[in-house]
Image 1 (tube, rainbow, N blue to C red):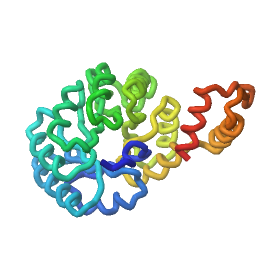
Image 2: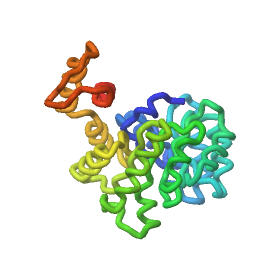
Image 3: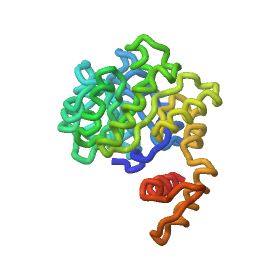
Length: 267
């Protein structure tokens, strides 16, 4: 398992049938590359994409692999391939713990799983999904969920409850903080930054990207701000001897100290 996946900020999707893009993605600055065998690949190209991904991983390259979902005609062949070569697998349309545990049983024990919560059922069952074995952290499939609900995926208010449910589920299951879904506009860095800042305030610490141009903005936005970092250092300085202290009029008790430590850990 690639340990960076637990703390990665940016996950860059690359179609599995475009091996010419694999190396470029690996040098894009993204914390993790996701070689996609699902939505980005047409039905007639699934087998070819799988072989491209297999070849890339056989060469010792690191990548998360998004396989096709349980119940699809391509699932079993995808699982056979990632069982031999992948350290981390992204599972689409994860709707209950059984989806994850069935996949985990077919993989080496060290293989991590990122379940994509992108249906109404998946959101409702988010806690059970996150508690399943080998889950590293969940990801949010905002576009797919919005399509199912018949709403605009760009309307953040409409998906607020779903996002918060995923954050709570990850925390309850003691998994890594969740990964936000994609921003479909690739030429609007201001919109991308606004989307990222919004979900950061909810407790997300990473985001799925669909173009290399999105990576730098996502990485930068998820870093603690200078104000946050300065506050955290003052909290840690004030509490270094364990005595009661206050910073900016706020008592430095254990929850405040833990937040300060978490901020510094992300710098």
